[in-house]
Image 1: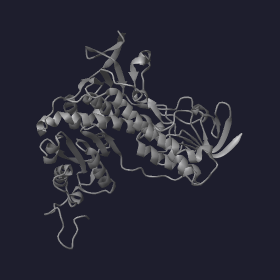
Image 2: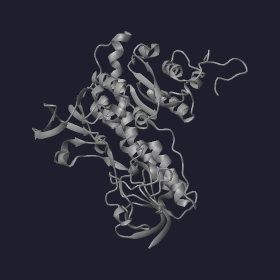
Image 3: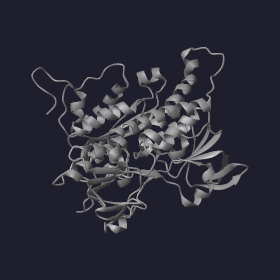
Image 4: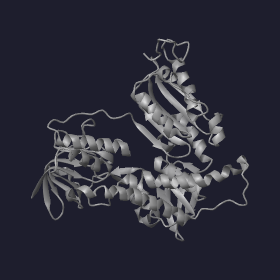
Length: 470
């Protein structure tokens, strides 16, 4: 039986990052993965979805031509086969790059599935191996309710959507989290008939009640959004009949975007004697990623904490480091940052509105909108609202939720400010160019500074020889 210093189960983002960290300390390691390679992000997630969104948004710009005075003889029409071929060509390039990056260490890779026999032993089917430390990085997969699996020929998820040769004429989207709203809006902008169904009004991960209402109003201009219970009734003439709130529709396909679940089945976790939470995920230390005192670490989407690429990469590095360290160390995570690439973008950075309420934090809210913001009006993208949350006592920035044009950039700026524990007053001392979308942030930041209990400065900038930043 072969023995290794470290075995990593899974060759996704977390597993690959863990491998790179482990390889700094030892050459006696192995990566095990019997699935499709290329990472979730590059193959079926972040990258192909953004490729489709870019095509859809480019096509959608035609709707502004009359306003801009651009004459045309007729509207252009998309060739769905060419659109999907373009998306797949980019997808293959991105995932292919990941696979090519594995060539330099292919002797450490085993294309099989692993299952625990005990804390140090893995069953690979036709062989067994042992390792001093083991990293679980098996990722996640789309959730499909058992009751709907009989309709599988009509169901799409992110694992199958990008394999379509062409696009259906009418599609239902179940769930409007980040994936659902991104792809649902993109399909609608490509002239696909879309009906979207959600159980509660929480589009793109927003938790702020006011922003939830605004997002629903904003996206309802493009999508037929149904809020409440929904179900698949039956197959009829090679289509599916679906219903929500007493109304019914017939669609060609359904895109299931109801979240992903950690891939833990068949890992043999019961052999380890570890405790599981209510979702069946092993209980682990979020700062070390270690399962109890066991020589096992869990990183990436599989642990269900922050299923986002940069978080998975960070966790892979922490798990890989601790799997080769003499003493396990704890690490602070980065400021939370979530971006949904709808139009407008939906972003949450730092503590969400729900987090602050749950933790009973005394905070004030600074608000701004883009309905009449000059640059946004010029761009034809003047829909959006931003809420920034600040500590009531000193105006220190705590978090933000937004639905805003180019929100991805403003969310980064605010996440950096939150990470550096800046106050609203401190950020107002920074330059704001004109005319840019970022200017709108000042309205919200000034509101926080005004509402906080800190002494108010006469100016937002400093006199010579002094600094506004304390």
